[in-house]
Image (cartoon, rainbow, N blue to C red; front, side, top):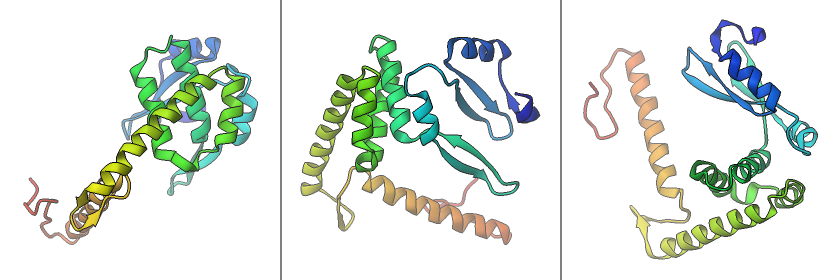
Length: 194
């Protein structure tokens, strides 16, 4: 933890417990108020493979900093494992599982997931998650056939959110640009912000 410096806060007792149990611990970056889940390797038969599959993500440009993260497939597998270890009662873990499948969709490596889920003894849970998300997608396709957002037909469950997010980002850029020039900015609904 010394390598992280004073910018991060971690409970030493929780860290030692996580290392001993090969589990996880929360680390907090004070300046950004960001919570980071730190997972200790060594708890599953897939640890070596997951470490090989990890991806490097740049988190700041100046100074340039990056960190390693698991792939969506490996996060999904861990969530399925924790759900099973918790006697399949954690709504939070299950929502996370479904969320990963819904957001990543066809980008997930289904063959890797099937093979790894079998090794972790969570293949039944993976099948259930895939089935539930496919059912949700089927419902959204039916909705898309009958609904429109503005003058456009809904083509995915995320389209209205994406459109709102794009408008929100554009307004934020416009507002920030105006602020830098010392001018008043408007909020999304056209009112002056407080």
